[in-house]
Image (tube, rainbow, N blue to C red; front, side, top):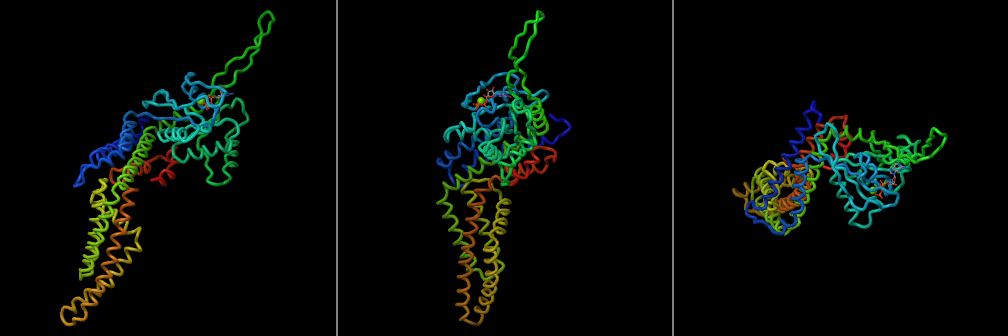
Amino acid sequence: MNESNPKPREEYKQARESLQRSLSWYSSFRRHHKYRPDVEVQAAVRQDLQALKSALDKLDRKVIKIAAFGLVSRGKSAVVNALLGQKILTTGPLHGVTQYPRSIPWTIPNCEMAIELIDTPGLDEIEGQARAKMARDVAYEADLILFIVAGDVTRTEYEALSNLHQIEKPLILVFNKIDLYPDTDREEIYRQLQELSQGNNAYFPDEIALVSAEPQPVQVRIEFPGGQVKTEWEESPPQIEELQKMITKIISQEGNTLLAISALFQAKKAQENIAKKTIELREKEAEEIIWKYAKYKAIAVGINPVFFLDILGGAITDFALINSLAKLYGLPITNYQAGKLWRQIFVSSGSLLLGELAIGAVLGVGKSATAIIGAFENPGAFTAYSGAAISQGAIAGYGAYAVGKAAQKYLEQGCSWGSFGAKTAIKNILDRTDPDTIIYRLQQELRENL
Ligand SMILES: Nc1nc2c(ncn2[C@@H]2O[C@H](COP(=O)(O)OP(=O)(O)OP(=O)(O)O)[C@@H](O)[C@H]2O)c(=O)[nH]1
Ligand SMILES: [Mg+2]
């Protein structure tokens, strides 16, 4: 690997640490606190735990997966063969020669990483849901995607390309069969893509390789010394160097980062799934907890005559509510994170909670003043006090309910944050990527997906 650049190792270490910690958390978290392990929840998240394990395993084995996609007969299998330097996969003019994904180990000289090349069936050949899912699964697991076209790019092809691009993996567009289309160049390909995109969400791959993976045999004339002439078909060697160079450059510069990021994205998906399923299965209990805290808060705020303590008491109840919900779900959250979450909820549902505070300020001040006066001289003031207390308490209770609901959403979507969460690790890695890399160009889109 690139020894002059120490960054990849650190990224790799960070990704590994994040995965290991979340794996050990999720493997034991259901035994925490007073909630006993829930068989239903455990069964529901088993597959996601497996996905976390396989993300870690992928990092440990350091296998970079490169998958070839494209419509039927564009030469996907031929491109994989040409990269391997051997005709291992069957190729042929009929549509649908390749029926199932197949991975074959590959090595690049002077590269410590193991590589798997994956051939897939044509995207338009894939019939029905099961096969479509098969292709998607391969794409999700891949670290680098080769999208193979040959000749004019069709609309279906452009759609398939755009769909693959949405999973945010580095992608090389491979224009194959250049022997049949010698006039095609990058400008021509960009022009076609531009036309197909019609300006809407146009996507242009950064890297385009022009290759000829299995050129047609050429006819050669052989003249023998006696004047005899014979014509023969001779195979021409594949022209694949351009693609080979691109792949080598990406892997030697960014191999570790690619591995780390795709393992972390896999982990993030698994963590989010775990949170979502747990929250669904614990819905009833969560609802009870939220109501309980809403009542506490309403009473605490309602009976408290001092404005400042109202707010403090309210915040403490909200905070305790967030913690109880996190415990119920068994999701990784520390006190510090619960506080941070409370602040986030406070900001995002600002108008409601600020409203609560503002009313609290008015009623709270009124309440404390009337309470004090009432205690000393004016028995009639007691009625005013209780009126203010009831409305303020109800508003506070409603506020707690809103906080509970928002916390549920946050826990569901954001449980992969935190100091060792996949999200944080991905962010750290992205912050340190070189402007010169393919990942840097993907960065913007990757960030949007966090
Ligand atoms: N002229 C020319 N023909 C090629 C080239 N590469 C592949 N072919 C031919 O194109 C046809 C399809 O190639 P395959 O590699 O089987 O295509 P595929 O995309 O894997 O096809 P499916 O598995 O059916 O989806 C075969 O007849 C190949 O010989 C090339 O560079 N030049
Ligand atoms: Mg094939």
